Structures are given as structure tokens and as C-alpha cells.
Length: 123
Image (cartoon, rainbow, N blue to C red; front, side, top):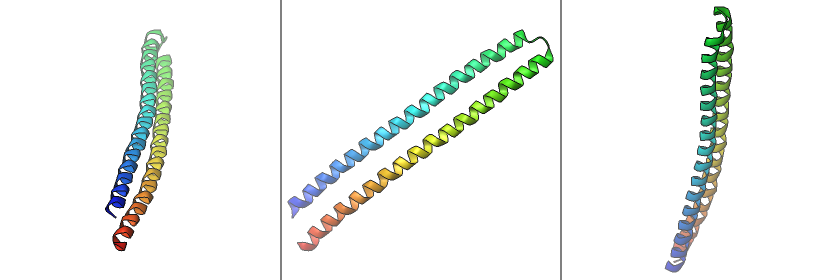
């Protein structure tokens, strides 16, 4: 019986290590997506700053400057909202994957505990 319990314990350890690897991979994928989005957003806002400075030097009056700034700020706002939506989508997708991993691992843990309980009851 002890040999069987040790085998179950060994399998549980392997399962835990596999789960940790899956979580690590999910964390890495999520980080890469979010980092890429942030890099793109930073690039966009740096470009928007350069365009704003260019507009200040090339505008032929207050009205043209204000119209250009308004259009630029609208574009920045739209890009910001898009980034928020994309970020929420990434978080939702990751959350779903975390939930699926948890359900899968819970089921495996229940099965292994049932095996141990069965062995102890038969002893």
C-alpha cells in the first residue's frame, strides 16, 4: 500500500510541476501581448508628440492650431480607448485560460485523493 501511495504522490508532484509549467507559459504569453501593446502605444504617443510640435511650428494661426490639436487629441483618445479594450480582451482570455487550468487541476487532485482514500480504506 505504501508503494502505491508513493506512486500517487510522485504522480501528484509531476502533475504539479506540469501545472506550474503551463501557468508559467500562460504568464509569459500574457506578458508578451501586454508588453507589445504598451510598446506600440508608447510609439504612437511619441509620434503624436512630434506631430503636435510640428503643428505648433507650422500652423498659420490660432484656428488652424486649435483644429489640428483637437484632431490630434481625438486620435489619441481613440487610440487610448482601443488600448483599453484590447487590454481587457487580453485579461479576459487569460482569465479564461487560468480558470480552465484550475478546473483541470482540481479534477486531477480529486481523482488522486480518491485513490489514496480508497487505498487507506482497503488497508
